[in-house]
Length: 107
Image (cartoon, rainbow, N blue to C red; front, side, top):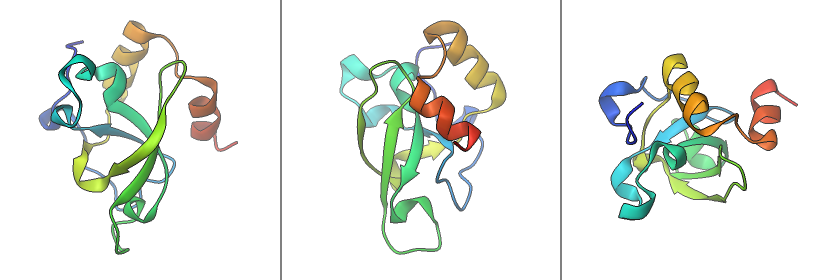
């Protein structure tokens, strides 16, 4: 897996992304954090999760160990990761952290 994910590799964003994995555009990050490790995050809430609502705030949780949780803007999201991309991410960085795993299972 290359270390930076670009838009052409992603599936388009769904209208409602709450509870889904999404990919942040690489140039959002400072150069030292431009890595796929930080680009794939879990959208956990905010008006920006729903394309039909006014607002762009999307609250996200990183998938790596010791995850950061922060506010992101919907316009900084370039798409959703493919199954292949998720498998490559896990092969390189390990399993998603427990919080993300639980959320993806609907717990």
